[in-house]
Image (cartoon, rainbow, N blue to C red):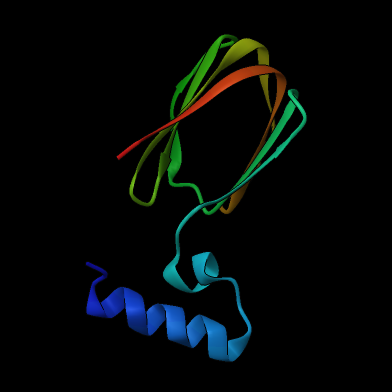
Length: 92
């Protein structure tokens, strides 16, 4: 059952013509092929290595696994990971 708050946010996003993830403040993920991942609205890096990166997101943790992983760019709102991405796991 959907919560009242989520229904309100969904309606607000629809009326304002905004993506629901922006209104709710949740993370936005874009994966381009097997070698680039863009994550917006992250909460910080928890673990960083060339084969695995753990990132805090609004409602859990994202684990990126692969080889030659590199945090190519990062600021307070977004980060860009490159390398051979094999698996992306969300843990809530």
